[in-house]
Image 1 (cartoon, helix red, strand yellow):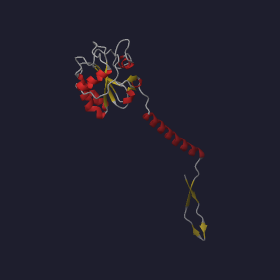
Image 2 (cartoon, one colour):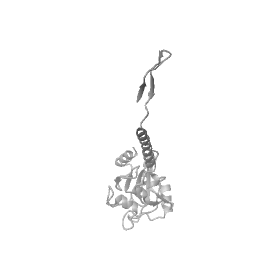
Image 3 (cartoon, rainbow, N blue to C red):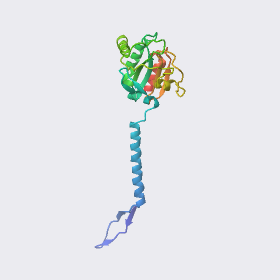
Image 4 (cartoon, rainbow, N blue to C red):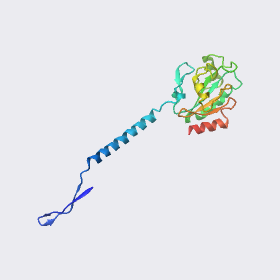
Length: 214
């Protein structure tokens, strides 16, 4: 608040009014400082949380790539991921071409297709990892990431597929054949599932991918 000091007379002349700032109360200063500190702390915590978001259950699951190196879906944090169980000797194997085309179309926008070789259906993925890698790259020019072999069902079901298909999944139910597809959002949540015969270039797949990329 501003306080007005009474005018005074010097040498017979009245001076102009002079103003002074009233002394602030100590409690007002304390509240102001505490408010500023609180805002700073909250801003820091919010920024830190956003930069180091806790991985989802799906992102925490340990995987191995086709080279045998440990990895996880957390390596693709911030990207949309299409998980596909693949096989080299299946009637649906030509879907590799459409998967690669989908990957090439949307990879610069944040899509990653990941192939998981699986021998659970008719023994249609019998080869070694080196043979699978060679087959995919030469026959279908696959450039998207490929992982180690795993089981998508049964007693040896991999934890990733337990999470994708189990009772707590938004899309529960056992994988029925090769080339089942699971779409995972940028924040690591399962948002869509497509059956083996739904091709990667099907409108339902591309629409779901585009929606997840927004």
